[in-house]
Length: 187
Image (cartoon, rainbow, N blue to C red):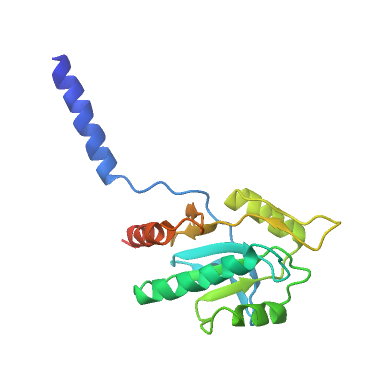
């Protein structure tokens, strides 16, 4: 009898696991900011779409240029794969990064802005709170420096607005992993 009970629970566990939806992270709250073209852009425009988020700023002296370059490579790779994904880069220095400055910045990395939005139009406090509360990453602008401390991962958000996973862009395998995850959440 005990073997039957154990077998029953084992099979039930397997069946439950097969039918369960993948676990997702925090839900991104509604936002509406300004993109590099001076247009309003936010969760309303992202509704029902998978998107990839990053945190950058244009005066960055270290990681932002490689991050943005990698995001441009990812944009091309996903387009080649026929994957319709939006890209959202939040500036972590919104008092400096105006739409005009962001427009100039993105032009150095891509000539396709149709699905890539660099966002500004919020306070320093708002971006610091968004980063910590929704993406569990740090954004901090010291008063004694022009450089902003921020996380360097990319974040996949599913069509329902939930953070699925974060990726370390310096990991050689992250693109393949992200493609598999995008395919999974689009089913």
